[in-house]
Length: 317
Image (cartoon, rainbow, N blue to C red; front, top):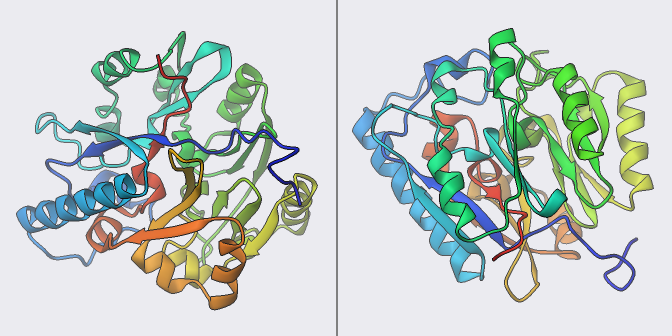
């Protein structure tokens, strides 16, 4: 197993971006491909927004309490962007080339409205940003790559894991990999109803020294073997999830580092409660764990803690 003395980890950061919701809601435009959204949720919009806001603020307070540097941007009431709380799908940040920002093509039309240049301008006042790579023009060709929802990145080994779906196009994976000098490990993943998993980050999390993944979702034996082999070759302890645990958002977690350099694994209460004692014990060898109740956000948005965080891998000014 790799250790800190021989490995300069780039995987984690203590700087993150989060978008505070103003009109969070069940998004009809994403529901067709996102089986994690609960169409039976019946609460009125005001109640959903109020509960989601409370969950968001609790998560921020929790992360700041651990020493995570959280940049909060307020969403705007107009245009209505019900999923703005999930910024990791439209933007990602990389230390490559003295600070690179990627903008991604989104499948849902109302999610495209989440891209805001004012956010990038604000971040330029805090961090080194030398270039912006905008892939959003692929929307006109109906080709999509939804950020670190589609891409689960091993930043240390420069590997992009991706399950192919209507929101993750193979051509764009190659485009990203070529520009960023990454290797792509792509595969097909399905749920218990044989429906494609919409985003890679609901079944997979790469930490510095571990990988949490639902290999059961990868039905093709060669693809499953290739994913497992790559994880083992990159010194990751593999912690396998069941599809039932994935349905409770146990795959949607993210490892960060506190200002003191301590590792912190972030997830929802539902995800934490879905994990078995042995899984928790294995994770806790490598990282602290923290969790927040995100039930309203999960039920209506079909995303969880990891989706709410855009990690800022940029050098501060």
